[in-house]
Length: 236
Ligand code: AP5
Image 1 (cartoon, helix red, strand yellow):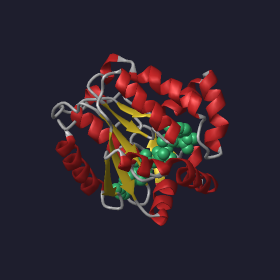
Image 2 (cartoon, helix red, strand yellow; image 1 turned 90 degrees about the vertical axis):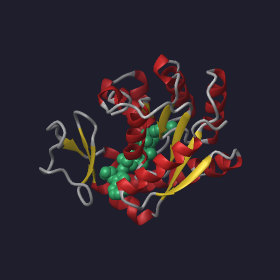
Image 3 (cartoon, rainbow, N blue to C red; image 1 turned 135 degrees about the vertical axis):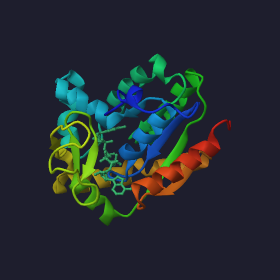
């Protein structure tokens, strides 16, 4: 979960040299693919959703503010998220790049990120846009189950664990996220459409967007992303 599992993964394939952003609606596979890409390059996987859920679990002041907002399927205010992200990317493990999953989510966040990257001497980000239809998203979200211990994600319809309710990796209990209930999914999709989808045009204008068909299998999507990122490495 989040950025803590990087050290456990196989040897990195080389330097990433920039931030990679996963942009796509809830359930499009951002977390699934961001984890793999981050492990491949040995850089942190920064999921703002995971960070916020950790704050909620700890009962921190940020967690207390974020909890009811996330339970309604709305976006947490920019000011709270930006501070959390700025603090995280100041850590030395981010100096060679990192993979964002679920950030930025508004044009304000994207503009702020651009300034932060400049300040830290990092290149313009590369954005992977995951494209997928609504019916498939609902199936993925209602079927998702997550391990309480290691954060591994399953899907009861398409990627079930070997034993129902138990993580294949560490035997942890699987749970359903509160915001994956059907009545919260539509507000999340609406928030994406209204507040986040303008980022597609924003990053396309900057020439930094690569579109991927996210309805394909996990392995196929992974392969296409690996190719796109390999092509961009070293570019300005
Ligand atoms: P967050 O945790 O980021 O959730 P999300 O964006 O809604 O995305 P999800 O985690 O639901 O889906 P995903 O795209 O990662 O898909 P996954 O790989 O898990 O945010 C939660 C909340 O936090 C927000 O609503 C907001 O309130 C707040 N928040 C977070 N960041 C914020 C920010 N920057 N600003 C303001 N507020 C913020 O896959 C889903 C399922 O599909 C899984 O079961 C998986 O196994 C399966 N699956 C994945 N890929 C495939 C495939 N190719 N084929 C078949 N099944 C697949």
